[in-house]
Image (tube, rainbow, N blue to C red; front, top):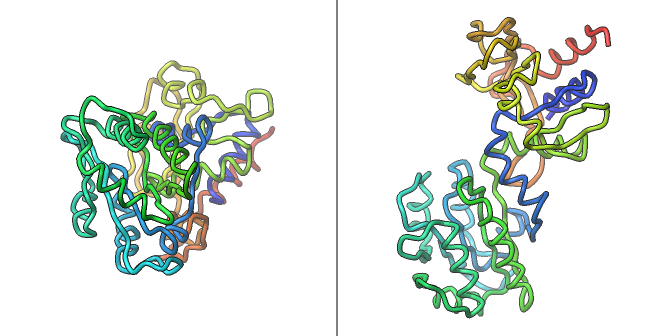
Length: 324
Protein backbone atom coordinates (compact mmCIF):
# COMPACT_ATOMS: atom_id res chain seq x y z
CA UNK A 1 0.00 0.00 0.00
CA UNK A 2 2.79 2.46 0.86
CA UNK A 3 4.45 1.94 -2.51
CA UNK A 4 1.18 2.64 -4.33
CA UNK A 5 0.63 5.79 -2.30
CA UNK A 6 4.09 7.11 -3.15
CA UNK A 7 3.63 6.44 -6.87
CA UNK A 8 0.30 8.27 -6.95
CA UNK A 9 1.81 11.21 -5.07
CA UNK A 10 4.66 11.35 -7.61
CA UNK A 11 2.21 11.23 -10.53
CA UNK A 12 0.26 14.12 -9.03
CA UNK A 13 3.44 16.18 -8.59
CA UNK A 14 4.52 15.60 -12.20
CA UNK A 15 1.09 15.85 -13.83
CA UNK A 16 1.54 12.25 -14.98
CA UNK A 17 -0.79 9.26 -15.39
CA UNK A 18 -0.57 5.89 -13.65
CA UNK A 19 -1.81 2.41 -14.46
CA UNK A 20 -1.36 -1.03 -12.91
CA UNK A 21 0.71 -3.70 -14.61
CA UNK A 22 -2.49 -5.81 -14.63
CA UNK A 23 -4.63 -2.88 -15.72
CA UNK A 24 -6.37 -4.71 -18.54
CA UNK A 25 -7.47 -7.54 -16.23
CA UNK A 26 -8.65 -5.08 -13.59
CA UNK A 27 -10.92 -3.17 -15.99
CA UNK A 28 -13.83 -5.63 -15.78
CA UNK A 29 -13.60 -5.96 -12.01
CA UNK A 30 -13.49 -2.19 -11.58
CA UNK A 31 -16.40 -1.69 -14.01
CA UNK A 32 -18.61 -3.88 -11.82
CA UNK A 33 -18.37 -1.22 -9.11
CA UNK A 34 -18.09 1.96 -11.21
CA UNK A 35 -20.77 1.13 -13.80
CA UNK A 36 -23.15 -1.44 -12.31
CA UNK A 37 -22.89 -1.81 -8.54
CA UNK A 38 -24.34 -4.73 -6.66
CA UNK A 39 -24.92 -6.48 -3.37
CA UNK A 40 -21.73 -7.73 -1.73
CA UNK A 41 -20.79 -9.43 1.51
CA UNK A 42 -17.53 -10.39 3.21
CA UNK A 43 -15.74 -13.74 3.55
CA UNK A 44 -16.44 -13.71 7.28
CA UNK A 45 -20.18 -13.36 6.68
CA UNK A 46 -20.07 -16.21 4.15
CA UNK A 47 -18.26 -18.46 6.62
CA UNK A 48 -20.66 -17.77 9.47
CA UNK A 49 -24.02 -17.23 7.78
CA UNK A 50 -24.18 -18.70 4.25
CA UNK A 51 -26.11 -21.99 4.20
CA UNK A 52 -26.11 -22.12 0.39
CA UNK A 53 -23.03 -21.29 -1.68
CA UNK A 54 -23.09 -21.05 -5.47
CA UNK A 55 -19.62 -20.80 -7.02
CA UNK A 56 -19.70 -18.96 -10.35
CA UNK A 57 -17.19 -20.20 -12.93
CA UNK A 58 -13.51 -20.50 -12.19
CA UNK A 59 -11.99 -18.95 -9.08
CA UNK A 60 -8.27 -18.02 -8.87
CA UNK A 61 -6.18 -20.67 -7.11
CA UNK A 62 -5.15 -18.22 -4.37
CA UNK A 63 -8.70 -18.39 -2.99
CA UNK A 64 -9.20 -22.16 -3.06
CA UNK A 65 -7.99 -22.84 0.49
CA UNK A 66 -10.45 -20.31 1.88
CA UNK A 67 -13.35 -21.83 -0.08
CA UNK A 68 -12.43 -25.34 1.10
CA UNK A 69 -12.28 -24.09 4.70
CA UNK A 70 -15.96 -23.15 4.49
CA UNK A 71 -16.78 -26.76 3.66
CA UNK A 72 -15.02 -28.05 6.77
CA UNK A 73 -17.47 -26.41 9.18
CA UNK A 74 -21.15 -25.41 9.12
CA UNK A 75 -22.33 -21.83 9.24
CA UNK A 76 -22.46 -21.28 13.00
CA UNK A 77 -25.03 -18.47 12.91
CA UNK A 78 -27.68 -20.71 11.34
CA UNK A 79 -29.42 -23.72 12.78
CA UNK A 80 -28.20 -26.02 9.99
CA UNK A 81 -25.45 -28.59 10.32
CA UNK A 82 -24.28 -28.41 6.70
CA UNK A 83 -24.19 -26.13 3.66
CA UNK A 84 -25.53 -26.75 0.18
CA UNK A 85 -23.07 -26.24 -2.66
CA UNK A 86 -23.59 -25.59 -6.36
CA UNK A 87 -21.11 -24.77 -9.15
CA UNK A 88 -22.22 -22.83 -12.23
CA UNK A 89 -19.69 -23.34 -15.02
CA UNK A 90 -19.15 -23.05 -18.74
CA UNK A 91 -19.77 -26.15 -20.81
CA UNK A 92 -16.90 -25.59 -23.20
CA UNK A 93 -13.09 -25.92 -23.04
CA UNK A 94 -11.50 -23.24 -20.88
CA UNK A 95 -8.62 -22.73 -18.47
CA UNK A 96 -9.16 -24.40 -15.10
CA UNK A 97 -7.29 -23.38 -11.95
CA UNK A 98 -8.49 -26.52 -10.17
CA UNK A 99 -11.90 -25.17 -9.14
CA UNK A 100 -13.71 -28.04 -10.85
CA UNK A 101 -11.82 -30.56 -8.72
CA UNK A 102 -12.49 -28.62 -5.53
CA UNK A 103 -16.18 -28.28 -6.41
CA UNK A 104 -16.40 -32.05 -6.58
CA UNK A 105 -14.56 -32.32 -3.26
CA UNK A 106 -17.18 -30.21 -1.44
CA UNK A 107 -20.02 -32.05 -3.15
CA UNK A 108 -21.17 -29.15 -5.30
CA UNK A 109 -24.01 -29.85 -7.72
CA UNK A 110 -23.00 -28.88 -11.25
CA UNK A 111 -25.03 -26.27 -13.14
CA UNK A 112 -24.31 -26.04 -16.87
CA UNK A 113 -25.94 -26.02 -20.28
CA UNK A 114 -24.75 -27.72 -23.45
CA UNK A 115 -22.31 -25.51 -25.37
CA UNK A 116 -22.94 -22.51 -23.11
CA UNK A 117 -20.23 -20.08 -22.08
CA UNK A 118 -20.14 -18.86 -18.49
CA UNK A 119 -21.92 -15.64 -19.46
CA UNK A 120 -24.67 -17.62 -21.21
CA UNK A 121 -24.96 -19.94 -18.20
CA UNK A 122 -25.46 -16.94 -15.87
CA UNK A 123 -28.17 -15.60 -18.20
CA UNK A 124 -29.89 -19.02 -18.30
CA UNK A 125 -29.72 -19.23 -14.51
CA UNK A 126 -31.32 -15.83 -14.01
CA UNK A 127 -34.04 -16.55 -16.55
CA UNK A 128 -34.70 -20.00 -15.10
CA UNK A 129 -35.01 -18.73 -11.54
CA UNK A 130 -37.43 -16.06 -12.78
CA UNK A 131 -39.60 -18.77 -14.36
CA UNK A 132 -38.91 -17.75 -17.94
CA UNK A 133 -38.54 -20.16 -20.85
CA UNK A 134 -35.04 -20.63 -22.30
CA UNK A 135 -33.77 -22.05 -25.58
CA UNK A 136 -31.60 -24.64 -23.82
CA UNK A 137 -32.04 -26.17 -20.34
CA UNK A 138 -29.69 -25.62 -17.43
CA UNK A 139 -28.81 -28.91 -15.77
CA UNK A 140 -29.92 -29.31 -12.13
CA UNK A 141 -31.81 -26.02 -12.08
CA UNK A 142 -34.71 -27.61 -10.17
CA UNK A 143 -32.30 -28.79 -7.47
CA UNK A 144 -31.07 -25.22 -7.04
CA UNK A 145 -34.62 -23.89 -6.87
CA UNK A 146 -35.39 -26.34 -4.05
CA UNK A 147 -32.20 -25.39 -2.19
CA UNK A 148 -32.93 -21.67 -2.59
CA UNK A 149 -36.44 -22.11 -1.21
CA UNK A 150 -34.97 -23.67 1.94
CA UNK A 151 -31.93 -21.37 2.27
CA UNK A 152 -31.76 -18.54 4.80
CA UNK A 153 -28.74 -16.78 3.27
CA UNK A 154 -27.59 -17.87 -0.21
CA UNK A 155 -24.32 -16.37 -1.47
CA UNK A 156 -22.91 -16.37 -5.01
CA UNK A 157 -19.10 -16.46 -5.05
CA UNK A 158 -17.39 -15.09 -8.16
CA UNK A 159 -14.26 -13.55 -9.62
CA UNK A 160 -13.77 -11.45 -12.76
CA UNK A 161 -14.84 -12.82 -16.14
CA UNK A 162 -12.45 -11.22 -18.67
CA UNK A 163 -14.12 -12.78 -21.69
CA UNK A 164 -17.70 -11.76 -20.85
CA UNK A 165 -17.67 -8.79 -18.47
CA UNK A 166 -21.42 -8.21 -18.77
CA UNK A 167 -21.97 -11.55 -17.00
CA UNK A 168 -20.87 -9.84 -13.77
CA UNK A 169 -23.71 -7.33 -14.12
CA UNK A 170 -26.11 -10.15 -15.01
CA UNK A 171 -25.15 -11.96 -11.81
CA UNK A 172 -25.89 -8.86 -9.74
CA UNK A 173 -29.29 -8.66 -11.42
CA UNK A 174 -29.93 -12.23 -10.30
CA UNK A 175 -28.98 -11.41 -6.70
CA UNK A 176 -31.23 -8.37 -6.81
CA UNK A 177 -34.12 -10.55 -8.04
CA UNK A 178 -33.67 -12.92 -5.09
CA UNK A 179 -33.65 -10.06 -2.59
CA UNK A 180 -37.26 -9.28 -3.45
CA UNK A 181 -38.30 -12.29 -1.40
CA UNK A 182 -35.31 -13.21 0.79
CA UNK A 183 -31.85 -12.11 1.85
CA UNK A 184 -29.12 -13.03 -0.64
CA UNK A 185 -25.72 -11.62 -1.52
CA UNK A 186 -22.53 -12.14 -3.50
CA UNK A 187 -18.84 -12.36 -2.65
CA UNK A 188 -16.32 -10.85 -5.04
CA UNK A 189 -12.86 -12.46 -4.99
CA UNK A 190 -10.36 -10.43 -7.05
CA UNK A 191 -8.08 -12.12 -9.55
CA UNK A 192 -5.06 -10.73 -7.70
CA UNK A 193 -5.08 -9.42 -4.12
CA UNK A 194 -2.09 -7.13 -4.58
CA UNK A 195 -3.63 -5.55 -7.68
CA UNK A 196 -6.97 -5.05 -5.94
CA UNK A 197 -5.16 -3.49 -2.99
CA UNK A 198 -3.66 -0.97 -5.41
CA UNK A 199 -7.15 -0.22 -6.74
CA UNK A 200 -8.52 0.43 -3.25
CA UNK A 201 -5.53 2.59 -2.33
CA UNK A 202 -5.99 4.64 -5.50
CA UNK A 203 -9.70 5.13 -4.78
CA UNK A 204 -8.89 6.17 -1.23
CA UNK A 205 -6.34 8.78 -2.38
CA UNK A 206 -7.95 10.20 -5.51
CA UNK A 207 -11.53 8.94 -5.62
CA UNK A 208 -10.68 6.90 -8.74
CA UNK A 209 -9.05 3.54 -9.62
CA UNK A 210 -5.82 3.18 -11.65
CA UNK A 211 -5.77 4.62 -15.17
CA UNK A 212 -6.06 8.04 -13.60
CA UNK A 213 -4.05 11.08 -14.70
CA UNK A 214 -3.38 14.60 -13.43
CA UNK A 215 -3.41 16.69 -16.63
CA UNK A 216 -4.50 19.86 -14.84
CA UNK A 217 -3.56 19.11 -11.26
CA UNK A 218 -6.83 17.36 -10.38
CA UNK A 219 -7.28 13.58 -10.84
CA UNK A 220 -9.08 12.51 -14.02
CA UNK A 221 -10.15 8.88 -14.51
CA UNK A 222 -10.26 7.67 -18.11
CA UNK A 223 -9.55 3.94 -18.70
CA UNK A 224 -8.92 4.51 -22.41
CA UNK A 225 -6.95 7.74 -22.34
CA UNK A 226 -4.68 6.62 -19.50
CA UNK A 227 -4.09 3.09 -20.75
CA UNK A 228 -0.30 3.20 -20.36
CA UNK A 229 0.38 0.53 -22.97
CA UNK A 230 -1.70 2.45 -25.51
CA UNK A 231 0.09 5.68 -24.59
CA UNK A 232 3.48 4.05 -25.15
CA UNK A 233 2.37 2.44 -28.37
CA UNK A 234 1.04 5.72 -29.77
CA UNK A 235 3.95 7.75 -28.39
CA UNK A 236 1.86 9.95 -26.13
CA UNK A 237 4.39 9.64 -23.29
CA UNK A 238 7.95 10.96 -23.01
CA UNK A 239 9.03 8.83 -20.03
CA UNK A 240 7.99 5.39 -18.77
CA UNK A 241 8.49 4.57 -15.07
CA UNK A 242 7.93 0.82 -14.62
CA UNK A 243 7.69 -0.67 -11.11
CA UNK A 244 7.46 -4.34 -10.18
CA UNK A 245 8.64 -6.13 -7.05
CA UNK A 246 7.72 -9.56 -8.45
CA UNK A 247 10.51 -12.01 -9.17
CA UNK A 248 10.98 -12.67 -12.87
CA UNK A 249 8.69 -9.83 -13.96
CA UNK A 250 9.43 -8.61 -17.45
CA UNK A 251 8.14 -5.98 -19.84
CA UNK A 252 8.34 -5.29 -23.52
CA UNK A 253 9.72 -1.85 -24.31
CA UNK A 254 7.78 0.05 -26.93
CA UNK A 255 9.53 2.48 -29.28
CA UNK A 256 12.30 4.76 -28.07
CA UNK A 257 10.55 6.23 -25.03
CA UNK A 258 13.08 6.34 -22.15
CA UNK A 259 12.45 3.69 -19.53
CA UNK A 260 13.27 3.80 -15.82
CA UNK A 261 12.74 0.44 -14.09
CA UNK A 262 12.30 -0.26 -10.39
CA UNK A 263 12.50 -4.02 -10.05
CA UNK A 264 13.48 -6.76 -7.62
CA UNK A 265 16.62 -7.69 -9.49
CA UNK A 266 20.37 -7.25 -9.17
CA UNK A 267 20.73 -7.11 -12.96
CA UNK A 268 19.86 -4.29 -15.38
CA UNK A 269 16.38 -4.53 -16.89
CA UNK A 270 16.56 -4.96 -20.65
CA UNK A 271 16.14 -1.69 -22.57
CA UNK A 272 15.98 0.38 -19.38
CA UNK A 273 18.05 3.57 -19.24
CA UNK A 274 18.12 3.23 -15.45
CA UNK A 275 17.46 0.19 -13.24
CA UNK A 276 16.96 0.53 -9.49
CA UNK A 277 16.79 -2.57 -7.31
CA UNK A 278 13.81 -2.53 -4.92
CA UNK A 279 12.47 -4.82 -2.21
CA UNK A 280 9.33 -6.96 -2.33
CA UNK A 281 6.67 -6.03 0.24
CA UNK A 282 6.01 -8.81 2.72
CA UNK A 283 9.23 -10.59 1.74
CA UNK A 284 12.12 -8.17 2.12
CA UNK A 285 10.34 -5.79 4.50
CA UNK A 286 7.18 -5.53 6.59
CA UNK A 287 4.20 -4.19 4.68
CA UNK A 288 0.48 -3.53 4.60
CA UNK A 289 -1.33 -5.69 2.02
CA UNK A 290 -4.90 -6.41 0.94
CA UNK A 291 -6.28 -9.80 1.96
CA UNK A 292 -9.41 -11.31 0.41
CA UNK A 293 -9.72 -13.68 3.37
CA UNK A 294 -10.60 -10.81 5.72
CA UNK A 295 -11.83 -8.37 3.07
CA UNK A 296 -9.50 -5.53 4.05
CA UNK A 297 -5.84 -4.57 4.54
CA UNK A 298 -3.60 -6.28 7.08
CA UNK A 299 -0.03 -6.07 8.31
CA UNK A 300 2.42 -8.57 6.81
CA UNK A 301 5.72 -9.48 8.42
CA UNK A 302 8.76 -9.82 6.17
CA UNK A 303 9.34 -13.51 5.42
CA UNK A 304 13.01 -13.01 4.41
CA UNK A 305 14.21 -9.55 5.54
CA UNK A 306 16.88 -7.96 3.36
CA UNK A 307 18.66 -4.64 2.91
CA UNK A 308 17.04 -3.86 -0.45
CA UNK A 309 15.32 -0.44 -0.46
CA UNK A 310 11.55 -0.15 -0.26
CA UNK A 311 9.68 1.16 -3.30
CA UNK A 312 8.09 3.95 -1.24
CA UNK A 313 11.51 5.14 -0.06
CA UNK A 314 13.00 5.16 -3.56
CA UNK A 315 10.02 7.04 -5.01
CA UNK A 316 10.14 9.55 -2.15
CA UNK A 317 13.83 10.27 -2.83
CA UNK A 318 13.12 10.70 -6.56
CA UNK A 319 10.29 13.11 -5.76
CA UNK A 320 12.42 15.17 -3.37
CA UNK A 321 15.20 15.42 -5.96
CA UNK A 322 12.91 16.87 -8.63
CA UNK A 323 13.05 20.66 -9.11
CA UNK A 324 9.27 21.05 -9.47
